Length: 108
Image (cartoon, rainbow, N blue to C red; front, top):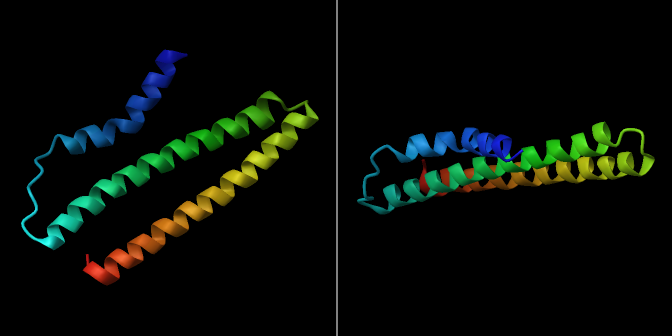
């Protein structure tokens, strides 16, 4: 089981490792500093989305597939799905608002 978790982590984190290998230049002005910070935050947001999606899928599998015959398990799975969808909507909304502010304030 640990090997599977390690492989999933490695597959999810691979884009971050490959982009970290590239040369990072020091920001020369405020706009390039903001671009650097927002790039880092953007990668963190994608990583959080991936982790949230994996947790959501685990809740669905655990609640509906594994405990499919158990009425309490299915009810808990339904609650988990609703909470996960609400969480995804909030995350996408906040991400959109931050992108809108970034583009309107910094024009990038």
